[in-house]
Image (cartoon, rainbow, N blue to C red; front, side, top):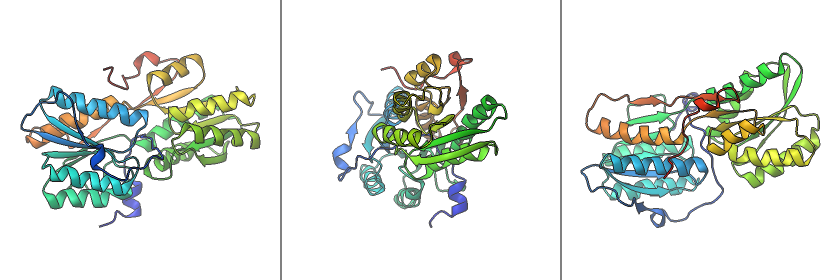
Length: 321
C-alpha cells in the first residue's frame, strides 16, 4: 500500500545526497566486502548513491560487518528507484539474513518493504523510517526536519531581529531534500525572507550554476542554506567570485572538510550527522535484532549544530581506513 501524504511527511530522513548517475544493471554493482567473515549472518547492503555521505556510509557498514563476523554484499542504486528494487531482488536471491537499505526516495519504500516481506527477509533502513514500523526489522534515522531547523535557528540568532534575505539551494526533489528545506524554511521568522529556492541536485557543478544565477538576481543576499557541504563549497566559490563574500552559508554533514570550512569562515555553521555512526548503528542493530537481543528497533542518530565555538565536539564523520 502506498504511503499516505501524512505518513510521507512524517518520515525521518538523513541528509543523504544524490547523484545524477544512473545504473541499468544491479548485478554489475554487487561486490563482496574484502576480508569479510563467512559467519552465519549475511547482510545485503543496498546503497542509494555516490556522494561522500554514501561512500562513508558503505565504509562503515563494511567495517562493522567485518568486526561483527558477518558477511556483507553491497550494491549501489545510483539514485534510481528501479535499480534499487533490482538490487533488493538480487540480494534476496542470495538468501541474505537481512537487508540494510539506504533508499533513493521514500516513494520507493512501499515496493522495497513489500518485496522483502514477501520473501521472508527482514529489512533494516538507514536514514528513513515509516510511521508504522511493523513491517521492518528496524531503522537508524536522522530527523532531517530538525537538521534544517537547527541551521535556521543559527540564522535567526545571527540576524538578531533584522530584516534579511535568504537563498535556499536544495538537493534533488524528494524526501530527504524536501524535509531538510522544509525544516529550515518553517523555522524562519517573517523577518527572514526566502527570496530564492532552487535545486542543486546534490551536484556541485549544478549548485555552482544555481548560486551564480541566485547572487546575480539577488546581490543583496544575506544568508544561504545549502543542502549538503559538497554543494556548499561550490556555492561559496560562486558567491566569492561574484564579490559576495559576506553571504553567510549554513549547511549539512559535518565532514572533516566541512569542519575546516567552518573554522576558516567559509561556512558559518553545519549540522553534523555522522555517516559512520549511521552505518555502525545499522549493522550492530540489525545483527542484534536478528539475534532477539534487547536493541532499540528505531535508533535516532544524534545531531549537532557545529560553529567555530564547538568544533571539537563534532563526531567523526567517516571511517579513516
